[in-house]
Amino acid sequence: MKRFISVALICGLGGLVAAGCDDGDGGTDSGPPDGTDAGPLPPGVDGGPGTDAGPGGGGSCSSPSNLVMVTGEIDADTTWECPNLYILQGNVFVTNGATLTITEGVEIVGDTGGSEAAALIVTRGSQIDAQGTAASPIVFTSGANLGARATGDWAGVALLGAAGTNSGTDCNTAGACTGGDGDYFENNIEGIPVTDPRGRYGGTDDASSCGTLRYVRIEFAGRELSPNNELNGLTVGGCGSGTTLDYVQVHRGKDDGIEFFGGTASLSHIVISGASDDSLDFDEGWRGNGQWIVIHQFEGLGDRGIESDNLGSNEAATPRTEVNLWNVTMIGTTDNKWALHREGMLGIMGNFLVHNYGAPVDVRGNTEDPNNYWPARFVYQNSVFNEVGAFAAEDLDEAAVCAEAMSSWTGSPAWVDATCADLSAESAQEDHYDDVAGERLNDDFGFDESMELMDAARNNTFGVDPMFSSITASAPSYVPGNASLPAGGTPVFNSNAPSGFGDTSATYVGAIDPAGTDWTEGWTAYPAN
Image 1 (cartoon, rainbow, N blue to C red):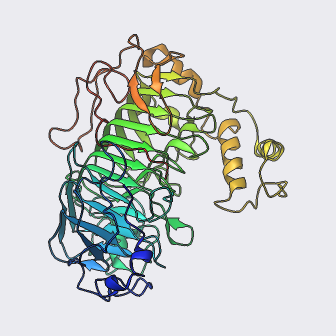
Image 2 (image 1 turned 90 degrees about the vertical axis):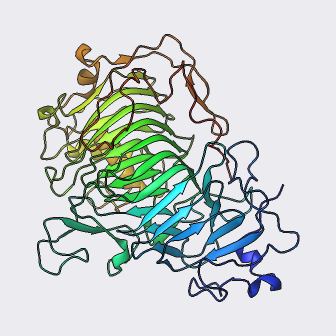
Image 3 (image 1 turned 120 degrees about the vertical axis):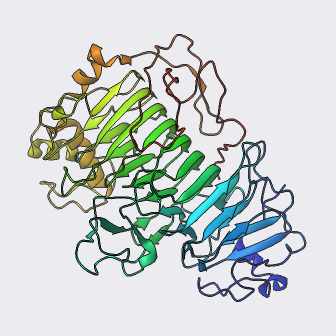
């Protein structure tokens, strides 16, 4: 069954020009008003949902008969439902306190041909209510043909809210913030012009909600909104603890899989597969909880499994990044590092199952000493680590680190900065230097990752194979086959966990109970293109 043809090609068919296709410049829709029926699919164009073979393929609306082109703003309560196929053209904002409801089985595709990247951005004060089911998930994906889809085809989904963050504009200054004056910070999400109030997040309402994503897949996202500024597959800025993120897969995103910028939202039953940068990233004072998380990094893709910060310019800034993460499975490659924790972040991390990484966890601190917080507020405990790379001696000075980075550089162009002082920001050489420095430079007040993780009091185990039956990119299984894995501990969640969140009886390591049900079955999918 062929996928629907691309938006650009559809709009080249005369019968649809009057049915809602725009002029290609990302501007005002030349057809019916936003969110209205754009008419039937043209003859010979196959419906998109359900076209990825097998359970959990596309959305499950059977033979969608209508295209709905969506542009601009959704400023009143709106429902997207079968049998429609929704096409995002350019940046689409949910505004004015509106709620966008998406019913089970609906597929939403990002136009790949417009000059402005397709994105869905739920602004502060508005909400999304996207609730699929295991048998009928909601799918956000690329508008390209099957076989031609790629990371970065469209921008992604962003949720922006009114919970606290520690970075941005100080709103104590009268008139400085669009959210009003007060004792909080307001920041702007990457890629949206700072002059556009629709890109702002942050506030004082830590219990607020950005809405619900349940049984939702987000695929092939990460296109730049502006030069060097991409959305992640799922971007969560300042969302409060009333937000629900449960049964969400982010697959083959060009930037991070999921990134939290402050806020108190929690997440559960999460799969992040094939991210091109970090899989899970959080900073700016995120204080949420997570349980049952799978991170799977594919060969030749990705950087770190987890990257976490508080704030680089003030490592003790409040509200402080301090999280509780439990029952996490991480599968990497020899090119990946399992985690980087720096800039004053704190977290209780337990019942991890980490397998097949080229480099282990790296802890850094410039002004905040991690030794002062371990193990009461920063710790890995009750976890299993297998084939995670060797802990390097952090015994070099900056000049020696630069020399080692130069000598081990195998990329292009040739390394020419003998002092490493003028490496281009965001460049591959800067990233390489950063990795070498993290492993060999004493940048953490002498914190000894190896000794601390292997301390018997932490109840961690090294060198036990989880025996996954498959860790391929196309057909993975995250259920450990080793029935003799060490037991984990009792999960503990912080005060921002919403009522009923998580399960404190999940005293096994990893995201899936070897003796229980595989919660990833039926609604996840792993297409290459």
